[in-house]
Length: 271
Image 1 (cartoon, rainbow, N blue to C red):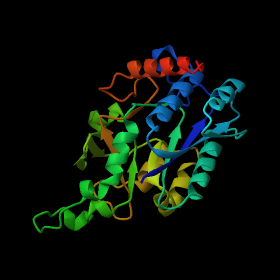
Image 2 (tube, one colour; image 1 turned 90 degrees about the vertical axis):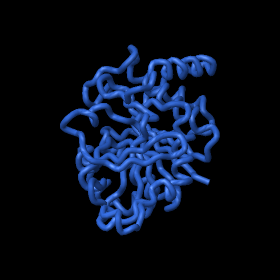
Image 3 (cartoon, helix red, strand yellow; image 1 turned 30 degrees about the vertical axis):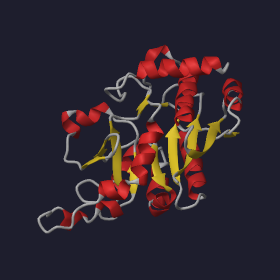
Image 4 (cartoon, rainbow, N blue to C red; image 1 turned 120 degrees about the vertical axis):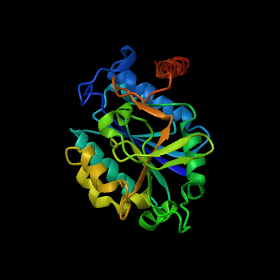
């Protein structure tokens, strides 16, 4: 059975690293609340440990997280995104090799079926990713069997990947519930096995300086060839979205999902 370790980095002192506007009139604390709750609700049928890595959280958020008894809150003053990310990486490295870690930022809203899609894919990924060894499959001579490559999953589907500068050849896979597209650029929100973190420990730690999404993407993810690189995949349609206007996952009614989570929180007395 897949075991998820959710490492959720939260800080309500900074409204937006890239100065983007939050959608639906939400502020940062409200965005954190619904982003967290969307994941918490989606995990109900899964085997998971949920840890909040807080950076000097406000009393309002501390009071909010206390309402969820099976969530661990590790709140200290870290002072920067880089320090928070480094702590997240160190915590992930201490876990068993065969467990999965979701390193996630605090402003990603998830669909209710997010982990249903993830679990089904991960339990069957060798079948879905297997690449034929037949001689007529010339590409296989260069890439090998993709089922043997380390896999990293980036849960949103950024719309800029479909713009002219970013259009490129990529592998496409079909699982029970959706397609999975190979990508080569992500933020620091991704799901991977602990053994994969250890394999790319040097590169992932280097990307925490800054932090630098580009260092992560350039040093860890394969493109056409995957020798000594990971296969990074994103679901189509995306199962999460970055809650910043202009970069939200397309083809999903995120306002309805946000409102559903607000209603759930109101029934819990948490909104």
